[in-house]
Amino acid sequence: MKNIAIILIVFFVLSQKKCFAQFSKQLDSLYETFNRSSSDSEKVIALGNLADYYYIFNLNHEADSLLHQQLLVAELSNNINLILKALFGDAILNIGTSETSESFDKTIMFIQKGIDYAKSTKQYNYLALGYSRMADILRRRGEYDKALANSVFALSALQNVTIDSVKAVIFISMGDVYLDRNEAVSAFANYNNAFDIAVKINSVVLQSKIHHSISEMYKKLGDDNIALVELNESLKLNKKYGNAIGMMKDYYGLARLTKEKFYIERTIELADSLHLYIYLLNGRRSMLEYYYVVEKNTQKALQYLENEQYVKLSFLNNGYGKFFQVKGNIYYYSGHPDSALHFYKIAEPEITKKFDRKASQFILVQIAECYADTGNASMAITYYVKALKLSKQMNDANSIAFISKRLSELYEKQNDFKNALTYSRQANVYEDSLKNLSKDRDIALLEVDRENKKHQQELILQQRLENNQRNIQFMAITVVILIIFFGILIIGSLTASIFTIKLLGYFFFISLFEFIILLFEHVFLKNVVHNQPIKLWIMKIVLIAMLVPIQQYLEQKLIKRLASRKLLKARTKFSIKKWRFKINKTSTVREVGLGKDSAVL
Image 1 (cartoon, rainbow, N blue to C red):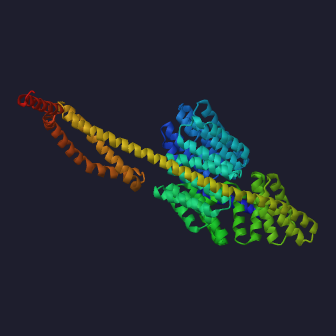
Image 2 (spheres, helix red, strand yellow; image 1 turned 30 degrees about the vertical axis):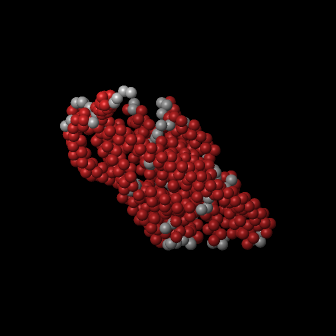
Image 3 (spheres, rainbow, N blue to C red; image 1 turned 45 degrees about the vertical axis):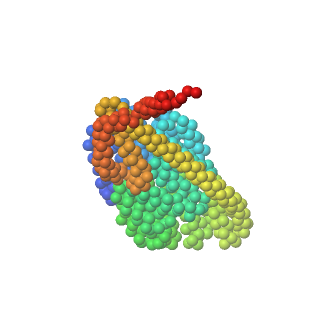
């Protein structure tokens, strides 16, 4: 066995060189961009892109080094914006969930450095963002209490946050923490708060992200149907607004949920066209899993792993243990436990030494399953007992129940009924606790549904209020324009100068036709162009081209009429003063006539 392991490790080193040749092409391009950078700003961006690329392929040590180099360039520039850009870049977000303790520790230290800098410079938007990122990385590590504490710190800074998108990120992060703590209702309430902000600022990206978070929540609650509905809502939204990156993320989410090949292919196609290597890699990994889990085609999966050099390299960079574990998975899930056991045993020493308890527990269970499937009950029991010990340390009720049940079955086959009964009882205890948890989840699902309906009603009422306020404002503008119009007519009937008449006429028609454009945009353009700048620009050009000649014609006619003094003549002819004088004169004549013709008795 040792000789075989040495041969495979030599193969590992040689194949890594072959992979690196293909990997280095893109890397050379990124380094070339960095070498051409002249300003500090360009260097910071280029180093961030390089770190991003290294993180994607699990080369965390190189990525960490580049991030520190990026920060050094920013600090030497003495530019606060560049320092913040370096400390809060997106590269660090690509760190995986199954990382070593060393990688997690370095990431936490880097995020803390950003928090400290934002606090010292009173950059509250970045301070809140830093706490949210800290909560996210601690959540991935499984330290949920610390994650919640950092989410609360982020929320406490909310009153000083001025950027709405950061506020939404804070609520999303807090929702994710509550979800991992199995507090679905609190998670959903935070997602709702984030969604309100996303709708308010019309952010399609944030709305899509929240749909994905809610989908994960329903998936965890065991309702894949509603999880699918949420992903389809996100896809519909991104298609409506032409958001290609969002659509690609939707297809990846649908691929993970449904295991459909179509969604995997769409993810790879879009990721490749957009040069998004993280999703291109994830899509190809999903395709590999599809071949050995769904199709159960061993040779096809092995050939795909060999041909897709980027996928192969990503596993190799994580250590030979992870690479051979993947090979073991290919054989195990396609129905060859004896071959799978061979690769799992090679992977075991490095994984149990380098990775955390969860990764160690998982490969021990895989080895135990292979021994059980090949008929070696004694070795299967040995590995299940090791895995059970780690499961109890992690307080993982699901794995404890599963392993206890498997141990009970194996001891029963060996006629060891005492141990079989012991582990059977243990399995029943944990299964009962899981059933109670399932009931709690059902209750939580009902509460989530009620919270959802309540939230929808609040949105409807808020929309009605906004519509009423909008209609009142439109009515007010209409009244003001009418007042201006009649004001011009009155002024035109007075002895105002021609310049005054032209000036008032000009502003009246500007106000009138801008109001017409505003109405047209609100009623028609908003639904037609969906806030897409190019379409909106073209439609407005067409509309203005049609209205300007009409505006000029009417403006000339009205000003000409007012400037001709016909209104002044009409006012003089029909003046109220003259009319009253005429009435008084008629009354006087009548009185005089009466005096001449009447006799005095």
